[in-house]
Structures are given as C-alpha cells and as structure tokens.
Length: 236
Length: 175
Image (cartoon, rainbow over all chains, first blue to last red; front, side, top):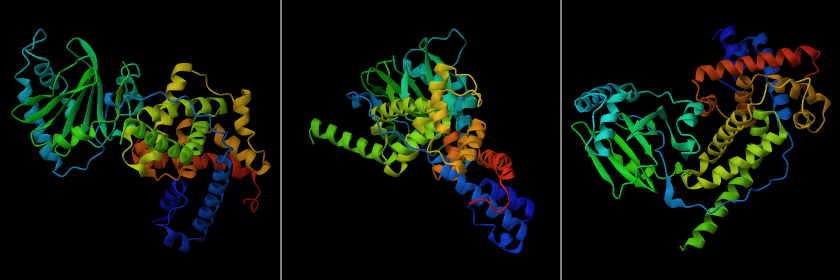
C-alpha cells in the first residue's frame, strides 16, 4: 500500500487498521490518519444531538392474517452459470405459450407463467438490488406495505396481469431468480401449483388477494413460502 | 397462548425495540431531513410502519437495520409528498435552526454547520458510519449502492468537512 492508496482508504474509514504497517513507516500518513481520527471524533460528537421525549403514535390493531413476507437474502449454492442456463430454459419454455398480443389464457395461472416471457431480462442472476425509490414506486403504499428487510430484490416492475397493474418482483433464490407477483385483487380459494418443464411455482391465497412465487425446477419453494409471510401487507 | 397474550407479547416486543432504538431513529431522521420537526413526523410514521409489520422481524439482531430502513423510506416519502425546496443554510426555518443550535457548543457549532451543508449523498453515509457504526458493506446495502460508491462518498465527505472545518482551525487546536 502506497501513500495515495492509504490516504484514500483512511479517508473513507479512519478507524481501519489494515494499513497500520504503512502508517507506522510513514510519518506524514500517520499524521494524516491522526488528523482524520480527530476529525471523526468531532463529527461523532456533533451528530449526537439531543433527542426529544418519545411520542408513541396510536398503534392500531394489526390483522396478522393479511401479512406476507419476502424471503431473506440467500447465497447461491450452485454456480451462476447453472442458474443462467436454467433461466434460458425457463424463457424458452414459457416462450411457446405466447402467441401474440391478443392471446387469451385459460386461467390466471396460465397468464402468470406466460408473463415471465414478457420480461426475460428480469430473470438475470445478479447481486445488485433495486433502489428503494424504485421499489417504493413499483409497490405503492396504496397497494401494499413492504418490509424492506425482505432481502435481495433484484428486479421491480409494474406489470399487467388480468388487466390490472401489479408489482412484479424478482429475488435471488438458491437455484436462480425467483419471480414474485403481488396480486391484491386476485382472490383464489386454495393454493394453485404452477408447474412447467423447468419451473415450479405456486399461487397462494393471501388475505383478499394472492401472491405468485415461481422459481427454477429445483428451487425449494417450501422454505421461500414460509419466509414469504411477513413483509407485504395489503393496503386495500 | 391466547390472542390477548399474543397481542401483549407483540406490544412488549415493540416497546423494547423502541426503547433501544428510538434515539438512533430520531437522530438518523434528523440528519437525513435536517429538520427537527420533520424528523419527529418521520419517526412517528416509521413507528406506525414498524408496528404494522413487526411480525416480519424474525431476526432480533437485524432490528436496528430494519428500523433505520423504515426511517429512510419514510423520510423519502415525506419529501416526495411535500416536495420541499432545497434548504438555504442562510435562511432556515426555526426547526431547521434548532438542529444547528442543539446543545450550543462553540467547538461543535462549525462542525454541525459543515455537516448540515454536506450534500445528502455525502451526509447520509457519514451519519451511518460515524453515528450508527455501520460498516461500508452495511451502508451499501441500506442505500442500494455498490461498496465502491460508498467508499467514494465517505472519502469526499471527509475531505469536504476537512476543507470546511480543519482549515479554519489552527494546527494543534483539534481535540
């Protein structure tokens, strides 16, 4: 580590210790580090503003039966190329369902599966989350309230399913991207399995609406289904 | 456990969280918004949100991050609703002034004013790192940035503060 590298690093985090060997050997950098640490102590004290007494808002009764959660962040256990390959197979599979703009579907489940082909770029393997601003735009407060603790959401887009605009999200599962469609206006009586050559999924009844979860064939949706129980609350 | 017991347990869990993290929530909101009154509103809304989605919090150690994320989003919502204009440091409202005038301390006044003047993009990661003790990875996750971008912002934030503060301070006067 040279002086320039050390100074860049220490300005980003004056508490870091991994450049101590350089600082020990370079009095100028050591003085620079000490100066920044002193500055940080002042910044810390300046930020410690007084806090007014807590005013607890009126807390409403909460109906926990209408709460759904998105899965938490996961690490891949299979290589990324495998997920990409699976995604390509998935896109090819759902592609044959699309016949044209005026296509009709036998069921909501058919339309959901076919919809995946509308936005194949959503099914990319990535570790880059969508911004909070984007997420808030796609999942507006009047539709649902989403707990951002949910995990790595890598795609968010407003889409049309059965003539209604709905949030289309993608998270990263164990075996590749997992699509989640929030369908507050689509009530279903029971869980509907969504199956295909390379996918498996489920349409779950949630409150007065439903949530579709679709992953790769080998994706363990049971664990996701369990996790999908807290971070979205229908607003309507 | 019957439903009233469950509700009491839920409320107790919430109260414990608020007792521990209320100060962090308020200070984060105050430095995001640079306005004490706005910060109180944002915290109120955040507490309501947190209450409604409390069952989403399964991992107690993640509570601080979860709550600060809610505060961050509520702050963004607030400013989207109000579409406030850019703050003019020379023409502050009383509640904005109140942040700068907090616990008057001549030694810290210039630091607070310099932090106040920082762009949002630089001030927020600095607050998260120095005040909240966040790592650069955690800041990147919360702000939806790559770690490199966070490091750059922190670096520039300190250089800017140093320009504003240190150059006005004679050598040897820093505490």
